[in-house]
Image 1 (tube, rainbow, N blue to C red):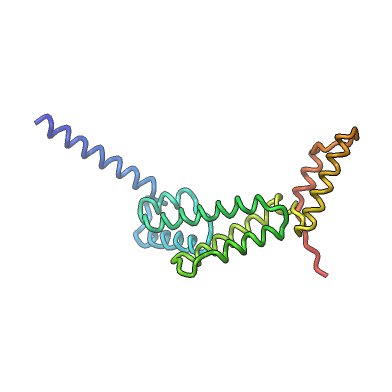
Image 2 (image 1 turned 180 degrees about the vertical axis):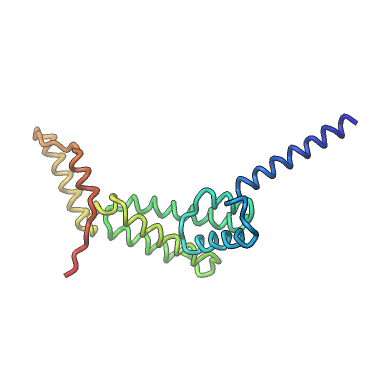
Length: 184
């Protein structure tokens, strides 16, 4: 008799936990079935268009659509990989080449091909908005010249020149300003 009561309490506790998890992963507990379906479709469209998902959207997929959750995780991993590759680049030209190469290596047979390409393109667009990208020289040649000038500057410092390389608050503000491409 005692064992059956403990088993019943365990089942009730499991139900409570399951209900709490379901409530946590619900975008809005008061949503109708039609609204819930629309929310789900919006998340799937977001994955296909290469956009980042919020933690709430990921939790919803994890609880309600494991396949879509796996696909979203795969897209996030692809995005993170490309972001790391772009951060290593020394010029805007290299960034473009890295993105083009990544897109070119997506298999024609991959069922998620369109979503992967959209993810790469979205990651590239987001990276182009960063100060890090704006500070990059346009071409490899310019990057090499800047690197040589940097080495020359370091050599002169080692020889006793007192020029300072320290970053000032004003230079930080200047670097964060937007860069406009000239057309003409």
